[in-house]
Image (tube, rainbow, N blue to C red; front, side):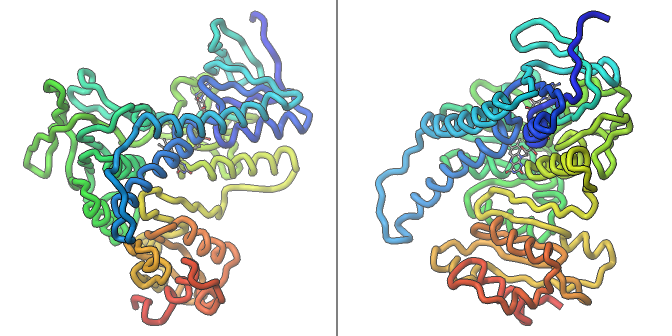
Length: 465
Ligand SMILES: Cc1cc2nc3c(=O)[nH]c(=O)nc-3n(C[C@H](O)[C@H](O)[C@H](O)COP(=O)(O)OP(=O)(O)OC[C@H]3O[C@@H](n4cnc5c(N)ncnc54)[C@H](O)[C@@H]3O)c2cc1C
């Protein structure tokens, strides 16, 4: 064995869990290294939440500007400056990234190593350094936070056609004339609506019978209605089969049941999910068990099958969100540093889909609750009943809560409406405190906040018996 560096703890990937974890481990006195192949902050800061939500803000301004006459405000022509949108996005990403990196660099006991890690045995990684050369690192403990990357579907002809993924689409310098989107999940729809608002014609191709697999059918149907109102073409039950280039156009062959159709567009976005970075990392060399999708298997304490190796965030499968990765960090910190007892058991998984209006979701869906044979009641109310939504003239969507029929506690909620994510968080707080729905029905909320709508959501008349 040649030269190597020995660490007490090695974090692989500076995602949303790894970045705070490496600092906590180092601050606890362990000699720690964090290895990052691209840029500090991971997907969220560089290619995920931060840049998308920055750009979605531009889309919303364009939407409101087009509707300004409804509010008695007249503007001139709406023109989109993609260069400025991209510049704004880059500036925010850079400032978040630099902040993260600066905090790591200031931490004592902590080495930031830019390079791509690969296991050679359960205690050793080989790092292909970003600036050339290789380094061998040995660690007493490893914490894998190496995340996922966009999946590339097996689609005939894809090799000979230029395509976009969730990262490259944010670097466009002009608005696509006609964007074809394969995939009706949250990434496909956030980008689909954004580019529609910036002026593209948009066609979304979704293989299954509804958008957002996993959400209740009524929620998915309302999202479909909203996107159609926005002028987005959505093709359900439609399978992308082949793709070809035809001059400046991209031809996408799809099957709708037994029927074949050819769609034509100027740009193609692949939004068909994400795959874990376990292959590059060669987790097999460390003896780590993975599932069929290549995600690392962990228990509820985020321990892998190999003692001393933990996995955090998207790479372990399950809900892939920034706040989940961050909570994974909390669990490991609690157990390893604070000598407490924490696990993923019973963890609530809230999330917000940043289409407009937002979809805020937490807990069980109605479908899941019924599959568990629970005795439930459903409270459901359109946003057009909400004073605040009427006042700001944004009444699309509805709110819905799944209530346990015996205890009255809220088991889950979907809020598809203006600031749906924030209203969902109110329901989440009630779930955390195990409040019965009557506490919200009778609560005094400031008028006319959106939260005040929770009084009426739980009116007797809004329960679907
Ligand atoms: C377009 C888009 C929008 C999103 N929007 C949201 C949102 O609104 N809200 C939300 O909660 N989540 C959102 N997500 C998901 C969110 O970004 C992730 O769940 C989050 O970043 C957590 O990821 P992570 O901590 O597992 O790792 P990541 O953030 O993916 O970080 C992994 C890091 O590991 C590095 N790495 C990988 N392999 C190696 C290796 N072999 N050696 C060294 N380093 C390596 C990578 O370069 C990367 O920096 C979005 C994702 C995308 C793609």
